Image (tube, rainbow, N blue to C red; front, side, top):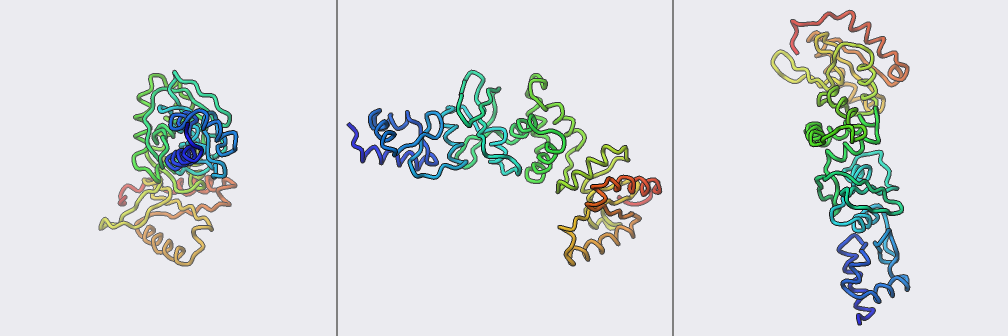
Length: 310
C-alpha cells in the first residue's frame, strides 16, 4: 500500500512536470486507485476537466486548462482554432473556451472544451503544449472570421511570420475538397486579392479595403520609392504607382510628435521632387468616406507618369 506521504510526492512530481495538472490514470499508475481516491476525497486533488486533476490551491489559468484538455483528449490531440491563435500571440481571441482538434476516429466530450474531429494535421510545440501548425491555425480561424476580421488576422500573421501566405496555400492544396472547410474559398480569394501585401494597422486596412471596393486604379501597399541614384526615399502607405500618387494615412496617435512630423515632411518633399503627389488621409476623412472622392479627383488629374522613376 502506498503511503499518503509518498502519494503526495508522486502527485507533486506530476504537477511539476505537466503545468500543475495530471490524469487520474497517471496518478493511479504511479500510486494506487485507493491513494488517488483518498487525494480526491480529502480535497488534495480537484477536478479540472474530464479525467484531468490539479493540486488544490494551485493556480488554474488558461495554460493549465489547455494542458488538462490535451491530457484528457489523448496523445494525438492538439490545441487549435482560437486557442492556437492565442498561443501564437494573435490579438483579439478569447481564452474562455479551449479548442482541441482530434483525429476523426476519436470522440471527446468535455464541459468548457470545444472538440473538432478533423483530418490529420501537423503540430508544433509551444511552451510544452501541442498546437496545430500556424497555417492550419489561420485556416481554422478563417472558418469563424469573415471579411475585415479575417484580414486583420492575415495582416498580423504577415507582419510576424514571413511567407505565411504561401504556407496557407500549401496547406489548402492538401485538402481534397475546399467545400469541406468553412471559409476556405473566402480565404483563398483574399490571398489572391492581397498578393502577399499587408497593412500595419486596422485603419490602414479599412482604407485599403475601401479603395479595393471603389473601382479605383490598382494600388500597392507599403510601396518603397527610390530616387534617381537608387537610394530609398520612403515607404508609402498606399501608392498608385503609374499615377505617382502617394497616399499617407496620418493618424494623430503616430504622427503628433515633432520628430515624426519633421521626418515625414522631409521625405514627402523628396517625393514631390521626384514627381509624386502626396495625398493625406485622416481618420475623419476615412470614417466619412470622403477620402475616396478626394482620391478620385487626384487620380483623375494624373495621367500615368511613365517617364518618371518608380
